[in-house]
Length: 179
Image 1: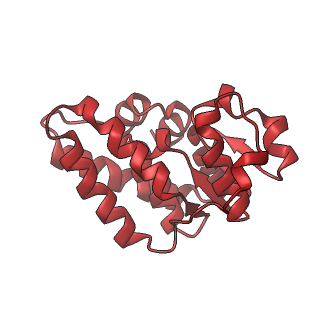
Image 2: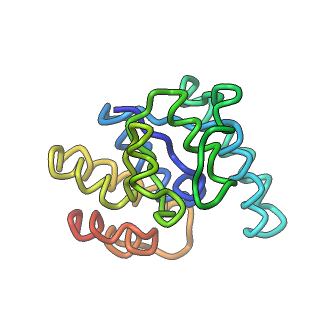
Image 3: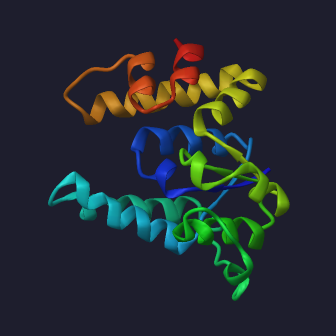
């Protein structure tokens, strides 16, 4: 299954790590565009003066780890598409151009299921998407969760438990499943 990862699921580190960890298990193939990554870079200014530096490094690592994930939307495709927020049409266009089956986003209101279905795409929130994979591969997803937790506890002064970390990352269902 090929899925487009929206900026809002790539920018939070824990959410991105969980999604890409599950992708590394072979459960799905992630896709994004240069514009999606650029939106991440621009949004990173919220983190303060080092936000863009951190984003640049993380984006470089992402591109190195997933060299086939970045795709350009087909030229001219966006002109025939409609979404409530015109600034999100490039994400839909990326999905269509790559023959993706779904878009993973936290932004349900700007990706109406009917509009996506007309283009052969589904929309999933990251928590439900991950929970679905946990149901078929609980051990694999638990290993991803343990790695993400270990990384977080090495990087931050606060020591997290799995449930607290994933709930803070807006992944409450998978947090409950992995507790």
